[in-house]
Length: 171
Figure 1 (spheres, helix red, strand yellow):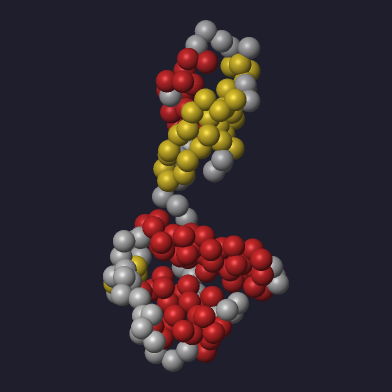
Figure 2 (spheres, rainbow, N blue to C red; figure 1 turned 180 degrees about the vertical axis):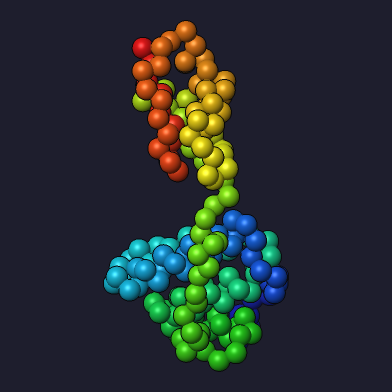
């Protein structure tokens, strides 16, 4: 009876921003796809990633808590309903509609690419999504550690694998 927690983090009605928003909508999209495909283990794994993301926030957006509990209710209905009530939401989590995702939130503004020279990672590059390959290659060549391994050598191949890495082969 006297075990109510009083150290709950503050919540806000403001929408999740940037990385938190992308995490939320990526999770909703992924869990929805996994549940429809009967891939429950990976759906639960995605919920754990979202839970860890919530843990990293100092102020929890209600929309994230709400969506998390709605999805959790498919796997742990009693726990989700108890948390739903403690959070002050109306009704039951298990009877609330499934959350929907915003496809525009799934696209990252920037992406991180590994830069390899002869198969070894020599640096990382943070670039805007949609940057042309020629610009990506130029920025990769300008990285200090990469430039050191390219200096005085002939490039036999320079390749951008979109969203993943930049590859240089030198002789």
